[in-house]
Image 1: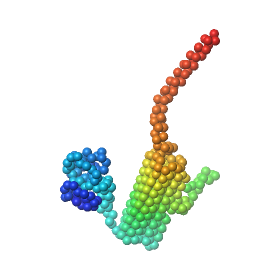
Image 2 (image 1 turned 45 degrees about the horizontal axis):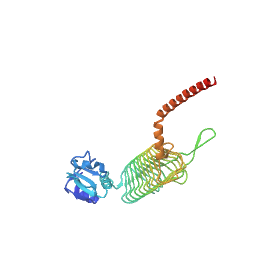
Image 3 (image 1 turned 90 degrees about the vertical axis):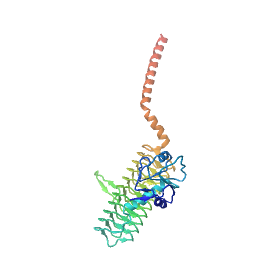
Length: 357
């Protein structure tokens, strides 16, 4: 599929410099681009590639000042990164068939389900009793939507997603393949004989507007009440969110992070990959937790950066790591110091004996 520079400039409201009829059929990194490729530059360290690039069209910032002639057609926008991302989003809509509507067969839609207009339900999907599917929702093949589930307008549920009974999804929610929403929380009561009795999980999951959830992530239903993912949250692949957790607005969490039950994460937090968080704690707004950290207690102060296991203040953790790396050398120095002390002690003892004589 080909696009001209004029079409792209119109779509992203950019200013053209060069041939408006230049055509592209793929996207590439600026350093790897060839004729027919579309690229973008937002980081100044890549600007040098612009003067040697074979790309046909490059999206750049309005503020970019050229130091010599370039061969690609330029499209200037306020923010090249945002403009390119918007363009990719539109392109993805075209190639992914997101304009599809209707119910493919074989599928099952319960008689009591409420299906709005312009909905797409892919083949081999199941829509349960009293489910509500809003305008423009896309449910791709092989999904399970349980009883009483509500999915609001323009949300996308990719293939293989399972959404258990009573879950509530807002507008423009995106859930990628293999994710499970509303599975039972991990609740078991220990008995005197050493076995465990399952505690019924009778709550639900609430996901607010503009949330995106990566593939194979699991979000457990609450024991009672709700597990809540606030608006604007972005979750990576392979994340475990336990029962009764609440994640605040616009928080982002990277892959393989696990959040234990009843923990409350503030808004605008950034949590790296493979972070482990214990249950029943509070994490203040704006907290940043580096990858592979382990958080074992509440974070009271806002906008702090944490690192390590157990996680503590970032700069202090770096100093501790530096000391840890130097431990072998420090051990050798300590051994030499001990040997010197022993020698001096022996010498002093000898001198004392001679003095007494």
